[in-house]
Length: 396
Image 1: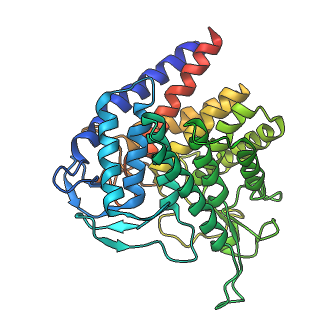
Image 2: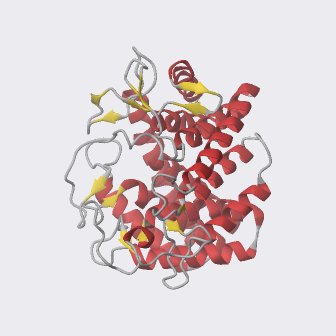
Image 3: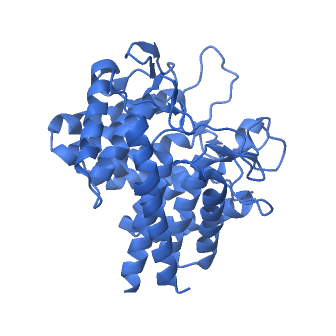
């Protein structure tokens, strides 16, 4: 098969999966017609098994439906779904400009807030949702809210990395999640016309580079305050390959626009090293948690294959192939894509399973949870459609 033929096959298959299976599943089953907002705890056939409303999931679903409305595949009803979700969030979950509760019950009563001293990722995802709604409607209140949410997220990330007065002996780590999600938010805000963040995005990539350990070549989840790895502890050696590749996917998205060669070389090298380290050569798929020195990882879920990590890694690899032309990245994408459609896609009902065992076997039945909603999978499918179609156009 020619490259153009392969790209066309990938684009068509992902488009069919997104618009024929995934979007209809969430449209049909996630809308709470009685109370408002979205259900995310859905079983294999779409039945609700818990009415709790985790606010990350509410914001992510608003963002995704608004982003799809803003895409070339626009359907009018998608903006209606996004607006209904946002109105429920604003009525029940908003505490102040840019600040939200973490968990609500089905009716909208607060159940839990983000603990003080930790990064507020709720604001991170609300910023993305508000930005896409600003692009869709031109309503400046959404632009202002997106900026306020980014400010709250940035401030709470800084607070989370300060030393603890109560436990002065505790190692203070910087977290890879902080700059990579700041980059993600700024990418969305920039593209939605909320503001120009070019310099800030490049600075976030520079910060992400500090999490790559020169000894192992791997992206670590934590680094020391001045940069550098702590390879003497489990916490310091912790590698989440799918998470790191998700961050590299954001970086590659920015690099395609900036053309910064030094950033591209770093991103390609880091992505390849992570792929070589974490793609399971025996059973396929991406391993979930790893230790940089291959010492034990004391987490029972470490060897599982998780939907979001496999999706985000595949997105990173297809972008890396687009920007480099290196066949290794295409092979890595095809390997994960095959695993995903073979073991994570439900062969009977729409949507994908969250986890597979090491060898790909299924061991649970739910399609959504307090941590899985209409986000990583549709974003990956949409990204893959966009990238493969760009590659076809470039070859025309």
